[in-house]
Image: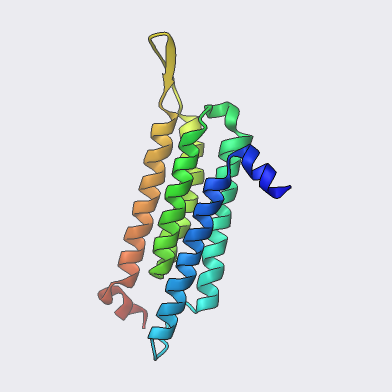
Length: 167
C-alpha cells in the first residue's frame, strides 16, 4: 500500500535519496565516534547528532510536501521543488556529518523563507504565447542565501579565535 502511494506521488527517488544520505550520516558519525578516543566537551554526542539530522530532514520533508503538493496552485512547478529538496538533503547530510548543525537548520529555514518570499514577490511577465514568473528565482536566491549564512555562522563558531572566548 505504501509503495503504491509513493509511486503515485512520484516520491520513490526522493525517499531513496533520503535513506542513502541518512545512512551515510550514520556511518560517518559512528566512524568519527569510534575514531576519537577523548571526548571533546563541545562535540555533539552521536545520539544528539542523529536526532538533529532526523529532525532537520523531517522538517525539510514537511516544507517540501507543503510547497510541492499543498501550495501547488501558487507556483505550478513540479520538478523545481524536488530539485531544491534533494539539494537540501545533501546539504543537511554533509553538514551534519561535519557537526555543523547551524547550516542544516538554516537550510530548512531557507526553504520555507524562500518559498514565502518567492510567492509573495512573484511577478508574471508575458513571454510570447506563455507567461514567465520570477518566483522560482527569488525562492532559490533566498534558499542559497540562508545556506551561505548558516555556513558562515558555523565557520565563525568553529573558528579558534571565537571558541577561545566561549571557554
